Length: 257
Image (cartoon, rainbow, N blue to C red; front, side, top):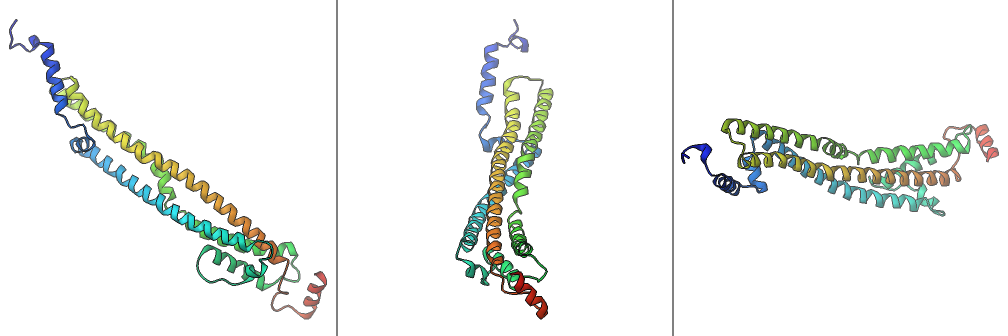
């Protein structure tokens, strides 16, 4: 047997060489990133940035929703029995509760039209407050679609990096004519790392999106419930007929009461 013949190399020696090559490869997260192809690096960087943005959105929305929840508690307190005078007041400020109360008080002060039933009067007050609530809560929605998008496409972006990396690994095998684990494993590890980052970015984004949307829906439901109670309280104590009504209309309104 010729010792210089590649086919005559001891299998144990080949295994030891492969093990040595594997031991020399840096399989840490930083090492996998540095050794990756530039396309895979771009995928990893994009996914990490998306994950950072998602966490920033989650923190910002958690603080915002807590503030909105406090404002809705103020609305519920104003809708409590015996709080009619407070509901009819004109609070200052740009917070949700102040804007909703101002919208309701504005409709209440316009008074009930002589040809308007009490139910229509109540609906008009409630509609004004619900419209203000909807406008204010819509301002809390920006950023939520980004969470949904990251959760939906993050794994696929990571999968693209994985496919690209595996293609490069197979190309390296073809060039080296070596199918040993030492040649294949590092490239496959880099490729799979991209998918792992995609999942790390997508899973929290999906969970956060669902929880935030559920909480936003509950806040809207609570606010609309408070608006309904406020409208009912205000409509039972109308300040008078609408401005510009004739004396005949005023008497008709008094008779209707």
